[in-house]
Length: 355
Ligand SMILES: O=P(O)(O)OC[C@H]1O[C@](O)(COP(=O)(O)O)[C@@H](O)[C@@H]1O
Ligand SMILES: [Mg+2]
Ligand SMILES: [Mg+2]
Image (cartoon, rainbow, N blue to C red; front, side, top):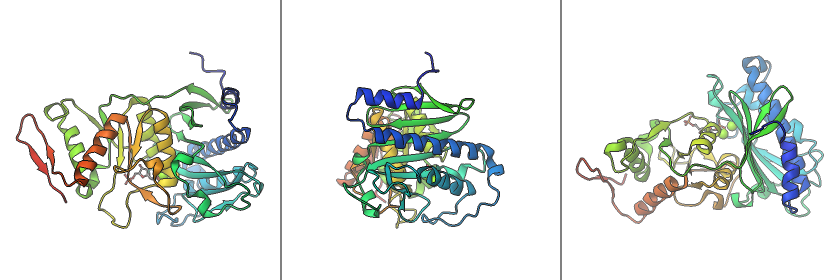
């Protein structure tokens, strides 16, 4: 296969040709998001060298910002402040909406997590930027917070970049998922992974196992069955992975399949989950569904959750469809009051008790 001809711009022109309804304004704003990602890629690759004179604070999430969180957030704002197709933006790092200076008549809204997985910056592992595009209400002249509270099914595009050994951009405009790799020498994203599909058969799962004591019984049962491998009810060995960088985990799932979980737990009862609905769960769920996978809170399709606030958190279970469905069925059984039983072929059956 030859990789040198289809740039992101060519791809967007092609999309317009294939889908007459595809709005050229959407293509233009995706290109500005692409430019932001290139700026962030450059800053991330400079590491500590990029951090001088950046002041950080505790963000709206109650989390200590890293200098590169601030640099990445500002990179998107700087580029997109002249994106006339955008009425406004919201970011994981800002309390409320930002009105785009040139976008008074913009028909779109941008939602983004400027740097996902930023706890990995100190140890030089893969991080990324997640984004989602929504339509602004007809005739809107300023970006009110309520305009962004649309379910994930309303997204018109979503994607994420990866700042790892290579820089990548993964994109969906609602017609499959496509991966582009940055050719740094010419500064252009080239289509290297057309029409990505999540493998259905998987032997990998990802969860932060240090939270085990806070998990609900359905998640405990699922993980225990995987851990028992060949000698357990699944009858096959599983691998476990945890990178603590959602962008890297979702990319691995796009390539190799698997299940990613940051489920509901009892660690902090004020938070129904760790990950953010608008900035993380919705764009990643659109990508995963577009690639043939599934995404659920355990009790509801993520894309159908009606947001109630900009920084709302949700439980996230996503990846290979069969695995998501299996874990959802465990939640359903648990919610019906059924006893969850670990069915071992070697040892006697055992109940996973309600907590
Ligand atoms: O440190 P934990 O609890 O394992 O959480 C890791 C998760 O948090 C995140 O880092 C949250 O994203 P941010 O880095 O944007 O806050 C995800 O990328 C990752 O899946
Ligand atoms: Mg994040
Ligand atoms: Mg972040």
